[in-house]
Amino acid sequence: MPVMPDKWIIKMSKTEDMIKPFSENQVRQGISFGVSSYGYDISLADEFKIFDPTSVDELDPKKDSSAYFKDFQGSSVLIPPNSFILARTKEYFKIPRNILTICPGKSTYARNGVLVNVTPFEPEWEGFATISLSNTTPVPVRVYANEGIAQLIFLKADEECVTSYKDKKGKYQAQKEITLSKSDKSVDR
Image (cartoon, rainbow, N blue to C red; front, side):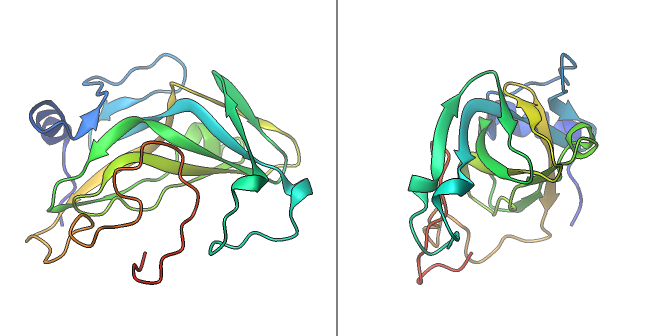
């Protein structure tokens, strides 16, 4: 399963709209984003959901948790101490059928106690990615919209899968906004 290089990422984004908006070069204003040697540094949109721990005794991924989040829009946001927020990518993705992605966080944020969690983008998944940003420190940490947050790495399979995310009608397919967890017994994720 080879890792795909910059020239493949550029070609696929220009001809197949794999990433939109797309930055062919790495933008180095603030925290970098755009094409890198073997990946694409994704950026954050200016929309966030801030978790409010004062209003809940427990979170259950099988139950609606929308009441426990406060919507926020801005050029930056503070992640409360020992807490997390949800965000979304500025980019919309259309993953090819023979590709799987992994997405580690950027070291700039890791060095400030922020853990970035993005699940793999499965073959033929498309949408804006919802990202969980956890602050592991006892003080607030600021993150910035329109700047880099994580690096997407594209892994090409030797052969196409039998069933893609699109084929199984995945519950997070074509999401347009920050999407909270959904419980669906018929779909394993």
